[in-house]
Amino acid sequence: MTPNPLALIAEITHRCPLHCVYCSNPLELAAVKDELSTSAWIDVFQQAGKLGMLHAHFTGGEPLARADLTELIAGACTAGLYTNLITSGIGLAEPRLRQLVDTGLDHIQISFQDSREDAANWIAGAKSHAHKIELSRVIRQYKVAFTVNLVVHRQNIDYLDEMISFIEQLAPERMEIAHTQYYGWALRNRAALLPTKAQLDKAVETVAAAEKRLAGRIRIDSVVPDYYARFPKACMGGWGRRLMLINPAGKVLPCHAAEVIPALTFENVRERSLEYIWQESASFQKFRGDAWMPEPCRSCDLRTQDFGGCRCQALLLAGDAATTDPACSLAPAHHIVEAAVAEANSNPAVSEFVSAASFVQLEQLTRNLWSYRKNPD
Amino acid sequence: MPDSQPRLAPGCRWATHAEKPVVLYPEGMIRVQGTGQNILELCDGERTIQQIVATLAEKYAASEPDKIMDDVCSFLEGLRNKRIVDY
Image (cartoon, rainbow over all chains, first blue to last red; front, side):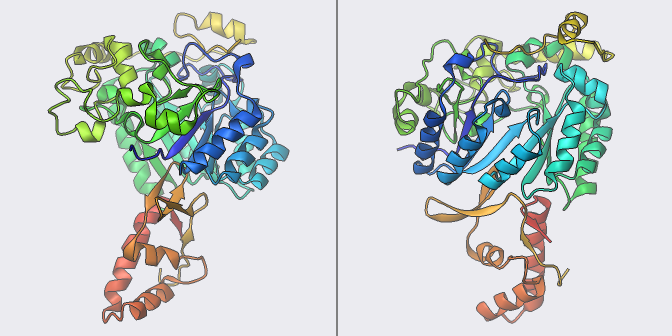
Protein backbone atom coordinates (compact mmCIF):
# COMPACT_ATOMS: atom_id res chain seq x y z
CA MET A 1 0.00 0.00 0.00
CA THR A 2 1.21 3.45 -0.88
CA PRO A 3 0.95 5.83 2.10
CA ASN A 4 -2.03 8.16 1.71
CA PRO A 5 -1.54 11.63 0.25
CA LEU A 6 -0.94 14.63 2.49
CA ALA A 7 -2.68 17.40 0.61
CA LEU A 8 -5.28 18.18 -2.00
CA ILE A 9 -4.79 20.94 -4.52
CA ALA A 10 -8.26 22.07 -5.52
CA GLU A 11 -8.05 23.96 -8.80
CA ILE A 12 -11.68 24.97 -8.58
CA THR A 13 -11.91 27.08 -11.74
CA HIS A 14 -9.66 28.23 -14.55
CA ARG A 15 -11.50 31.54 -14.83
CA CYS A 16 -9.32 34.47 -13.79
CA PRO A 17 -9.60 38.24 -14.01
CA LEU A 18 -5.81 38.43 -14.41
CA HIS A 19 -3.80 37.41 -17.45
CA CYS A 20 -0.38 36.86 -15.87
CA VAL A 21 2.24 36.02 -18.47
CA TYR A 22 3.91 33.48 -16.15
CA CYS A 23 0.72 31.52 -15.36
CA SER A 24 1.42 27.82 -14.89
CA ASN A 25 -2.11 26.79 -15.86
CA PRO A 26 -2.27 24.57 -18.94
CA LEU A 27 -2.69 26.24 -22.32
CA GLU A 28 -5.82 24.07 -22.68
CA LEU A 29 -7.97 25.51 -19.90
CA ALA A 30 -10.98 23.66 -18.49
CA ALA A 31 -14.25 25.08 -19.81
CA VAL A 32 -16.70 26.79 -17.46
CA LYS A 33 -19.51 24.38 -18.40
CA ASP A 34 -17.38 21.42 -17.28
CA GLU A 35 -16.67 22.75 -13.77
CA LEU A 36 -17.55 20.45 -10.87
CA SER A 37 -20.65 21.36 -8.86
CA THR A 38 -20.61 22.56 -5.26
CA SER A 39 -21.80 19.19 -3.97
CA ALA A 40 -19.23 17.28 -6.03
CA TRP A 41 -16.43 19.35 -4.50
CA ILE A 42 -17.80 18.91 -0.98
CA ASP A 43 -17.86 15.15 -1.56
CA VAL A 44 -14.22 15.33 -2.68
CA PHE A 45 -13.25 17.13 0.55
CA GLN A 46 -15.05 14.48 2.60
CA GLN A 47 -13.09 11.76 0.82
CA ALA A 48 -9.85 13.70 1.31
CA GLY A 49 -10.49 14.01 5.04
CA LYS A 50 -11.20 10.29 5.34
CA LEU A 51 -7.97 9.51 3.50
CA GLY A 52 -6.11 11.45 6.18
CA MET A 53 -5.17 14.40 3.99
CA LEU A 54 -4.24 17.48 5.99
CA HIS A 55 -4.45 20.48 3.68
CA ALA A 56 -6.81 21.72 0.99
CA HIS A 57 -5.13 24.35 -1.16
CA PHE A 58 -7.76 26.34 -3.06
CA THR A 59 -6.38 27.66 -6.29
CA GLY A 60 -7.30 28.21 -9.92
CA GLY A 61 -7.52 30.33 -12.03
CA GLU A 62 -8.99 32.64 -9.45
CA PRO A 63 -10.89 30.72 -6.75
CA LEU A 64 -12.94 33.83 -5.94
CA ALA A 65 -14.49 33.57 -9.41
CA ARG A 66 -16.65 30.79 -7.97
CA ALA A 67 -19.67 32.29 -6.22
CA ASP A 68 -19.85 29.22 -3.95
CA LEU A 69 -16.31 29.58 -2.56
CA THR A 70 -17.49 30.11 1.02
CA GLU A 71 -19.54 26.90 0.82
CA LEU A 72 -16.55 25.03 -0.56
CA ILE A 73 -14.27 26.32 2.22
CA ALA A 74 -16.94 25.31 4.75
CA GLY A 75 -17.03 21.83 3.19
CA ALA A 76 -13.28 21.45 3.50
CA CYS A 77 -13.29 22.71 7.11
CA THR A 78 -16.06 20.26 8.03
CA ALA A 79 -13.95 17.47 6.53
CA GLY A 80 -11.17 18.46 8.94
CA LEU A 81 -8.86 19.95 6.33
CA TYR A 82 -6.59 22.95 6.80
CA THR A 83 -7.84 25.52 4.27
CA ASN A 84 -5.48 27.67 2.25
CA LEU A 85 -6.79 30.19 -0.26
CA ILE A 86 -4.32 31.07 -3.02
CA THR A 87 -5.67 34.16 -4.73
CA SER A 88 -5.06 37.40 -6.57
CA GLY A 89 -7.60 39.00 -4.24
CA ILE A 90 -9.63 40.31 -7.16
CA GLY A 91 -13.27 39.75 -6.26
CA LEU A 92 -12.64 39.98 -2.53
CA ALA A 93 -13.98 42.85 -0.48
CA GLU A 94 -14.35 42.96 3.30
CA PRO A 95 -17.81 41.32 3.67
CA ARG A 96 -16.75 38.23 1.73
CA LEU A 97 -13.41 38.08 3.53
CA ARG A 98 -15.27 38.20 6.86
CA GLN A 99 -17.50 35.33 5.70
CA LEU A 100 -14.50 33.24 4.70
CA VAL A 101 -12.68 33.84 7.97
CA ASP A 102 -15.83 33.15 10.00
CA THR A 103 -16.23 29.91 8.05
CA GLY A 104 -12.81 28.78 9.22
CA LEU A 105 -10.35 29.81 6.50
CA ASP A 106 -6.90 29.18 7.97
CA HIS A 107 -4.65 31.04 5.58
CA ILE A 108 -4.78 33.42 2.65
CA GLN A 109 -2.05 33.98 0.11
CA ILE A 110 -2.15 37.02 -2.15
CA SER A 111 0.13 37.23 -5.15
CA PHE A 112 1.79 40.46 -6.23
CA GLN A 113 3.40 41.00 -9.61
CA ASP A 114 5.74 43.88 -8.70
CA SER A 115 6.05 46.76 -6.25
CA ARG A 116 5.76 49.30 -9.10
CA GLU A 117 2.09 49.71 -9.90
CA ASP A 118 2.44 50.19 -13.67
CA ALA A 119 4.80 47.24 -13.99
CA ALA A 120 2.56 45.03 -11.86
CA ASN A 121 -0.47 45.79 -14.02
CA TRP A 122 1.57 45.23 -17.19
CA ILE A 123 2.66 41.76 -16.02
CA ALA A 124 -0.85 40.83 -14.84
CA GLY A 125 -2.55 42.30 -17.91
CA ALA A 126 -5.07 43.88 -15.56
CA LYS A 127 -5.30 46.86 -13.23
CA SER A 128 -5.15 44.92 -10.01
CA HIS A 129 -2.22 46.24 -7.97
CA ALA A 130 -3.97 49.00 -6.01
CA HIS A 131 -6.78 46.67 -4.94
CA LYS A 132 -4.30 44.09 -3.66
CA ILE A 133 -2.64 46.68 -1.43
CA GLU A 134 -5.97 47.82 -0.06
CA LEU A 135 -7.06 44.22 0.53
CA SER A 136 -3.81 43.36 2.30
CA ARG A 137 -4.51 46.12 4.82
CA VAL A 138 -8.00 44.73 5.44
CA ILE A 139 -6.68 41.18 5.82
CA ARG A 140 -4.42 42.25 8.67
CA GLN A 141 -7.50 43.29 10.65
CA TYR A 142 -8.73 39.68 10.62
CA LYS A 143 -7.59 36.59 12.42
CA VAL A 144 -6.23 34.72 9.45
CA ALA A 145 -2.65 33.88 8.53
CA PHE A 146 -1.30 35.85 5.59
CA THR A 147 1.36 35.14 2.99
CA VAL A 148 2.42 37.39 0.14
CA ASN A 149 3.62 35.61 -2.95
CA LEU A 150 5.82 37.27 -5.50
CA VAL A 151 6.66 35.61 -8.79
CA VAL A 152 10.04 36.81 -10.03
CA HIS A 153 11.48 36.76 -13.52
CA ARG A 154 13.65 38.79 -15.88
CA GLN A 155 11.24 41.76 -16.00
CA ASN A 156 10.98 42.42 -12.26
CA ILE A 157 13.90 40.67 -10.56
CA ASP A 158 16.13 43.78 -10.69
CA TYR A 159 13.67 45.40 -8.27
CA LEU A 160 13.67 42.52 -5.78
CA ASP A 161 15.07 44.60 -2.94
CA GLU A 162 12.30 47.19 -3.38
CA MET A 163 9.70 44.48 -3.72
CA ILE A 164 10.76 42.85 -0.45
CA SER A 165 10.54 46.21 1.35
CA PHE A 166 7.14 46.75 -0.22
CA ILE A 167 5.93 43.35 1.03
CA GLU A 168 7.39 44.04 4.47
CA GLN A 169 5.01 47.00 4.79
CA LEU A 170 2.08 44.69 4.12
CA ALA A 171 3.13 42.78 7.29
CA PRO A 172 2.46 39.16 6.28
CA GLU A 173 3.74 36.24 8.36
CA ARG A 174 5.41 34.79 5.27
CA MET A 175 6.60 35.83 1.87
CA GLU A 176 7.26 33.51 -1.00
CA ILE A 177 9.79 34.54 -3.60
CA ALA A 178 8.79 32.19 -6.38
CA HIS A 179 10.97 32.03 -9.45
CA THR A 180 8.89 31.43 -12.53
CA GLN A 181 8.54 27.77 -13.43
CA TYR A 182 8.34 27.11 -17.12
CA TYR A 183 5.06 25.35 -17.75
CA GLY A 184 1.92 26.45 -19.54
CA TRP A 185 1.92 30.16 -20.37
CA ALA A 186 5.29 30.70 -18.72
CA LEU A 187 6.96 28.22 -21.06
CA ARG A 188 5.40 29.97 -24.04
CA ASN A 189 6.81 33.27 -22.71
CA ARG A 190 10.13 31.90 -21.49
CA ALA A 191 12.35 34.14 -23.60
CA ALA A 192 10.84 37.21 -21.93
CA LEU A 193 10.92 35.72 -18.43
CA LEU A 194 14.12 33.73 -17.92
CA PRO A 195 16.55 35.87 -15.94
CA THR A 196 20.27 36.17 -16.64
CA LYS A 197 22.83 34.56 -14.34
CA ALA A 198 23.89 38.01 -13.13
CA GLN A 199 20.28 38.88 -12.26
CA LEU A 200 19.87 35.61 -10.41
CA ASP A 201 23.12 35.93 -8.44
CA LYS A 202 22.14 39.40 -7.28
CA ALA A 203 18.66 38.13 -6.31
CA VAL A 204 20.14 35.31 -4.23
CA GLU A 205 22.23 37.86 -2.29
CA THR A 206 19.21 40.13 -1.84
CA VAL A 207 17.11 37.28 -0.45
CA ALA A 208 19.87 36.15 1.91
CA ALA A 209 20.20 39.67 3.33
CA ALA A 210 16.43 40.01 3.70
CA GLU A 211 16.16 36.65 5.47
CA LYS A 212 18.68 37.84 8.01
CA ARG A 213 17.01 41.22 8.47
CA LEU A 214 13.47 39.82 8.77
CA ALA A 215 14.25 36.72 10.87
CA GLY A 216 11.53 36.12 13.45
CA ARG A 217 9.21 38.64 11.75
CA ILE A 218 8.60 37.41 8.22
CA ARG A 219 9.53 33.98 7.01
CA ILE A 220 10.89 33.98 3.48
CA ASP A 221 10.47 30.89 1.32
CA SER A 222 12.54 30.99 -1.81
CA VAL A 223 13.89 28.37 -4.15
CA VAL A 224 16.59 28.68 -6.80
CA PRO A 225 15.02 28.30 -10.25
CA ASP A 226 15.72 24.88 -11.66
CA TYR A 227 17.20 26.08 -14.97
CA TYR A 228 20.14 27.39 -12.93
CA ALA A 229 20.38 24.52 -10.43
CA ARG A 230 22.70 21.53 -10.67
CA PHE A 231 20.02 19.06 -9.81
CA PRO A 232 16.30 19.12 -10.54
CA LYS A 233 13.55 20.01 -8.10
CA ALA A 234 11.71 17.21 -6.30
CA CYS A 235 8.62 18.08 -8.27
CA MET A 236 5.48 17.73 -6.08
CA GLY A 237 7.63 15.79 -3.60
CA GLY A 238 7.58 12.88 -6.04
CA TRP A 239 4.94 11.66 -8.49
CA GLY A 240 1.92 10.25 -6.65
CA ARG A 241 3.77 10.46 -3.39
CA ARG A 242 2.22 13.33 -1.42
CA LEU A 243 -0.25 15.36 -3.44
CA MET A 244 -3.35 15.06 -5.55
CA LEU A 245 -4.52 17.87 -7.79
CA ILE A 246 -8.09 18.07 -8.98
CA ASN A 247 -8.71 20.30 -11.96
CA PRO A 248 -11.90 22.34 -12.44
CA ALA A 249 -13.52 19.55 -14.45
CA GLY A 250 -12.80 16.89 -11.81
CA LYS A 251 -9.77 15.26 -13.43
CA VAL A 252 -7.32 14.00 -10.84
CA LEU A 253 -3.68 14.73 -11.61
CA PRO A 254 -0.38 14.12 -9.83
CA CYS A 255 0.67 17.71 -10.62
CA HIS A 256 -0.43 20.96 -12.28
CA ALA A 257 0.92 20.18 -15.72
CA ALA A 258 0.46 16.41 -16.02
CA GLU A 259 -2.15 16.68 -18.76
CA VAL A 260 0.61 17.58 -21.22
CA ILE A 261 1.79 13.95 -21.11
CA PRO A 262 -0.08 12.48 -24.06
CA ALA A 263 0.32 8.81 -23.15
CA LEU A 264 -1.53 9.17 -19.85
CA THR A 265 -5.26 9.05 -19.17
CA PHE A 266 -6.47 10.65 -15.97
CA GLU A 267 -9.40 9.50 -13.87
CA ASN A 268 -12.24 11.81 -12.87
CA VAL A 269 -13.80 12.20 -9.43
CA ARG A 270 -17.18 11.87 -11.14
CA GLU A 271 -16.37 8.22 -11.85
CA ARG A 272 -13.84 7.03 -9.29
CA SER A 273 -13.06 7.55 -5.62
CA LEU A 274 -9.93 9.43 -4.57
CA GLU A 275 -8.76 6.32 -2.77
CA TYR A 276 -9.05 4.18 -5.90
CA ILE A 277 -7.30 6.82 -7.99
CA TRP A 278 -4.47 7.17 -5.48
CA GLN A 279 -3.91 3.46 -4.93
CA GLU A 280 -4.96 1.82 -8.19
CA SER A 281 -5.00 4.19 -11.16
CA ALA A 282 -2.43 3.67 -13.89
CA SER A 283 -1.71 7.42 -14.04
CA PHE A 284 -0.69 7.70 -10.38
CA GLN A 285 1.40 4.55 -10.55
CA LYS A 286 3.15 5.41 -13.79
CA PHE A 287 6.09 7.34 -12.30
CA ARG A 288 5.72 6.42 -8.63
CA GLY A 289 8.82 5.00 -6.97
CA ASP A 290 11.96 4.33 -9.01
CA ALA A 291 11.19 1.26 -11.15
CA TRP A 292 10.37 3.48 -14.16
CA MET A 293 13.65 5.36 -14.00
CA PRO A 294 16.19 5.34 -16.81
CA GLU A 295 19.87 6.04 -16.31
CA PRO A 296 21.43 8.20 -14.97
CA CYS A 297 18.61 8.35 -12.37
CA ARG A 298 18.37 4.62 -11.78
CA SER A 299 21.85 4.36 -10.26
CA CYS A 300 21.95 7.90 -8.82
CA ASP A 301 22.04 8.38 -5.05
CA LEU A 302 19.79 11.43 -5.38
CA ARG A 303 16.89 9.48 -6.90
CA THR A 304 15.17 9.18 -3.52
CA GLN A 305 15.50 12.95 -2.99
CA ASP A 306 14.58 14.47 -6.35
CA PHE A 307 12.71 11.49 -7.86
CA GLY A 308 14.25 12.21 -11.25
CA GLY A 309 12.85 15.73 -11.30
CA CYS A 310 9.74 16.73 -13.16
CA ARG A 311 8.02 14.38 -15.64
CA CYS A 312 6.17 17.20 -17.34
CA GLN A 313 9.34 19.21 -17.86
CA ALA A 314 10.97 16.09 -19.34
CA LEU A 315 8.07 15.80 -21.79
CA LEU A 316 7.89 19.50 -22.59
CA LEU A 317 11.61 19.97 -23.19
CA ALA A 318 12.90 16.55 -24.27
CA GLY A 319 9.71 15.08 -25.70
CA ASP A 320 9.82 12.07 -23.35
CA ALA A 321 8.12 12.04 -19.95
CA ALA A 322 10.21 9.04 -18.87
CA THR A 323 13.62 10.61 -19.29
CA THR A 324 15.66 12.45 -16.64
CA ASP A 325 14.47 16.02 -16.13
CA PRO A 326 16.60 18.13 -18.52
CA ALA A 327 17.13 20.61 -15.66
CA CYS A 328 19.50 18.02 -14.12
CA SER A 329 23.14 18.64 -15.01
CA LEU A 330 23.54 14.86 -15.48
CA ALA A 331 20.57 14.49 -17.85
CA PRO A 332 21.16 13.35 -21.44
CA ALA A 333 18.91 16.24 -22.56
CA HIS A 334 20.52 18.87 -20.31
CA HIS A 335 21.83 20.65 -23.42
CA ILE A 336 18.26 21.86 -24.03
CA VAL A 337 18.24 23.76 -20.74
CA GLU A 338 21.81 24.94 -21.32
CA ALA A 339 20.76 26.35 -24.70
CA ALA A 340 17.85 28.26 -23.12
CA VAL A 341 20.15 29.61 -20.42
CA ALA A 342 22.81 30.58 -22.98
CA GLU A 343 20.21 32.43 -25.00
CA ALA A 344 18.93 34.23 -21.90
CA ASN A 345 22.46 35.34 -21.07
CA SER A 346 23.36 36.42 -24.60
CA ASN A 347 21.01 39.37 -24.27
CA PRO A 348 20.47 40.96 -20.86
CA ALA A 349 17.78 43.33 -22.14
CA VAL A 350 14.80 44.11 -19.94
CA SER A 351 11.66 45.59 -21.45
CA GLU A 352 10.02 48.91 -20.64
CA PHE A 353 6.57 48.41 -19.18
CA VAL A 354 3.64 49.75 -21.13
CA SER A 355 0.13 50.81 -20.15
CA ALA A 356 -2.91 50.74 -22.37
CA ALA A 357 -6.53 51.83 -22.26
CA SER A 358 -7.82 48.30 -22.79
CA PHE A 359 -6.62 44.70 -22.53
CA VAL A 360 -6.94 44.24 -26.28
CA GLN A 361 -4.69 47.23 -26.84
CA LEU A 362 -2.22 45.95 -24.23
CA GLU A 363 -2.08 42.59 -26.01
CA GLN A 364 -1.31 44.33 -29.28
CA LEU A 365 1.40 46.53 -27.79
CA THR A 366 3.19 43.58 -26.16
CA ARG A 367 2.65 40.83 -28.73
CA ASN A 368 6.32 40.73 -29.71
CA LEU A 369 7.30 40.26 -26.07
CA TRP A 370 4.78 37.76 -24.68
CA SER A 371 1.27 36.27 -24.81
CA TYR A 372 -1.11 36.99 -21.97
CA ARG A 373 -2.97 34.09 -20.38
CA LYS A 374 -6.41 33.67 -21.92
CA ASN A 375 -9.64 32.78 -20.16
CA PRO A 376 -11.49 29.48 -20.68
CA ASP A 377 -14.63 29.25 -22.84
CA MET B 1 13.45 36.47 26.56
CA PRO B 2 12.72 34.38 29.73
CA ASP B 3 9.56 36.50 30.19
CA SER B 4 8.32 35.96 26.63
CA GLN B 5 5.08 34.02 26.22
CA PRO B 6 5.40 31.77 23.19
CA ARG B 7 2.38 30.47 21.30
CA LEU B 8 1.71 28.90 17.92
CA ALA B 9 1.86 31.57 15.20
CA PRO B 10 -1.23 32.55 13.18
CA GLY B 11 -2.11 29.84 10.69
CA CYS B 12 -0.44 27.10 12.74
CA ARG B 13 -2.38 24.50 14.68
CA TRP B 14 -2.23 21.01 16.09
CA ALA B 15 -3.55 18.02 14.18
CA THR B 16 -3.10 14.28 14.09
CA HIS B 17 -1.49 12.45 11.21
CA ALA B 18 -1.02 8.69 11.12
CA GLU B 19 -2.02 8.70 14.80
CA LYS B 20 0.85 11.04 15.70
CA PRO B 21 0.68 14.71 16.68
CA VAL B 22 1.74 17.22 14.03
CA VAL B 23 1.65 20.99 13.73
CA LEU B 24 0.11 22.25 10.52
CA TYR B 25 1.35 25.47 8.94
CA PRO B 26 0.16 27.08 5.71
CA GLU B 27 2.13 24.97 3.27
CA GLY B 28 2.89 21.84 5.23
CA MET B 29 3.35 20.20 8.60
CA ILE B 30 6.02 19.32 11.10
CA ARG B 31 6.03 16.12 13.07
CA VAL B 32 6.61 16.75 16.75
CA GLN B 33 7.52 14.17 19.32
CA GLY B 34 9.45 13.70 22.53
CA THR B 35 10.89 16.83 24.12
CA GLY B 36 9.84 19.05 21.24
CA GLN B 37 6.24 17.99 21.73
CA ASN B 38 6.51 18.61 25.48
CA ILE B 39 7.84 22.11 24.89
CA LEU B 40 5.31 23.04 22.20
CA GLU B 41 2.37 21.79 24.23
CA LEU B 42 3.32 24.28 26.92
CA CYS B 43 3.40 27.20 24.45
CA ASP B 44 -0.09 28.51 25.12
CA GLY B 45 0.64 32.24 25.00
CA GLU B 46 0.21 32.42 28.78
CA ARG B 47 3.19 30.60 30.22
CA THR B 48 6.53 32.38 30.04
CA ILE B 49 9.64 30.64 28.75
CA GLN B 50 10.88 30.69 32.36
CA GLN B 51 7.76 28.83 33.50
CA ILE B 52 8.04 26.36 30.65
CA VAL B 53 11.63 25.60 31.62
CA ALA B 54 10.63 25.18 35.28
CA THR B 55 7.83 22.78 34.30
CA LEU B 56 10.18 20.73 32.15
CA ALA B 57 12.91 20.69 34.81
CA GLU B 58 10.40 19.31 37.30
CA LYS B 59 9.02 16.78 34.82
CA TYR B 60 12.45 15.40 34.02
CA ALA B 61 13.83 15.91 37.53
CA ALA B 62 16.75 17.58 35.79
CA SER B 63 19.53 19.23 37.68
CA GLU B 64 20.66 21.61 34.94
CA PRO B 65 17.94 24.21 34.36
CA ASP B 66 20.45 26.43 32.50
CA LYS B 67 20.93 23.72 29.94
CA ILE B 68 17.18 23.28 29.62
CA MET B 69 16.82 27.05 29.15
CA ASP B 70 19.42 26.98 26.34
CA ASP B 71 17.74 24.01 24.65
CA VAL B 72 14.26 25.48 24.90
CA CYS B 73 15.42 28.87 23.60
CA SER B 74 17.22 27.45 20.60
CA PHE B 75 14.31 25.11 19.81
CA LEU B 76 11.82 27.99 19.97
CA GLU B 77 14.05 30.36 18.03
CA GLY B 78 14.23 27.85 15.17
CA LEU B 79 10.45 27.64 15.09
CA ARG B 80 10.10 31.40 15.39
CA ASN B 81 12.26 31.87 12.30
CA LYS B 82 9.90 29.53 10.50
CA ARG B 83 6.94 31.55 11.80
CA ILE B 84 5.53 28.49 13.51
CA VAL B 85 5.91 29.97 17.00
CA ASP B 86 5.52 33.62 17.97
CA TYR B 87 6.76 35.40 21.08
